[in-house]
Image (cartoon, rainbow, N blue to C red; front, top):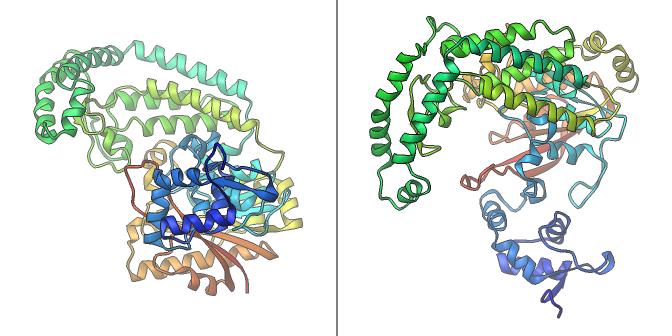
Length: 528
């Protein structure tokens, strides 16, 4: 016995935890808890021990409870080591990964786990080495190519969406940061000058003061939230009453400052979802971006503008992701528990995101390696990868053709879940990119019926069969999927491949309020 309480060997800890939880806790599970700092390691490798109290505390904790509950629902084959629950959100959205919002992306730690050269109890061999080239035929926002750059692995991404390609390439580009900052400063100064000729900022200042006074009186912090929690207030009724009560104050300010809430037409996304004042600011900044001579600088600042206007859509704080109907007046906000307002200027978000982007690029510069990464725009079912690569980077093309591609790490779209072009409709309107919605595999608008599933199986199979032309003979393919319709065995068969391993991982939600048990599988495929 020691100051840490009763000590157990790894084997003893496995047996104790199995009895304590009523679930099979293996020695590998205990080793994982040690490796990721969930419990303290005591002693040397030859005689590693843990304190029983540490184990008890872990299984009392939120994640300990969740691990047991999720395995009850999803099965004991759930690999909790691949939950990456030890990472905070800031770490799963590190550096350039958060240059622009994107639905359906995976966390970089999952990519690192399979691409780096470490081995453990679950990943018993390494599949890729420094200097290899890998492929992501569903590149999305570029997570795989970014992590390849960190790991000194060359990478080719492909995406049918021109905007996705822009995001991915902007993340891996090496910038002249002085030029980027100089152009940002120039545009910000010009925007502020533009706004001096408008009443928008003065209007917002008066509106914010009126909202502060009204909310302080009617939604005092923390008393209001406490009373809501105690059931003393009917939130829907009270919020609606106060929303109507503030509306005359808002309307008077709108009239006083001659604020135009809607545009004259609503033909496009930009027409419908932005106030006239914001639309004018967007056009002003976009025209300033067009003046930039350095192509790389121009592209990254265009992405900053896209990120900015996404945050300035005329919608409520609770509806940023789904977009129901444009909102042009103040409203009761269930997210913040007070009266909130739509935005009338992009300046605040523009300044926030320009600073954040420069900081993230600088962070990534310290980690990047001297390797090739590029994202190609095209249909992965038919694209001639090396021919298209030659058009973008002849040196990379020569290397890739000589050594060929070692394998794939990708997250194909899920059937009937997301419309990948529509989520960035504002950017397609602004930049004038051609949309290729009809080429999406498994989009939301096609549903999840029998025909949609058959089309999905055919689409993914075609991608794999086309990709094989550019791979080495002994390739390794890893596909991340929630295969609830059991389509991947058929996809593997259609592609002349076999599934040699399946890594089942829990997908943890960002907030502890959302406890739905959800998993996905990383399928490891090889040639038959």
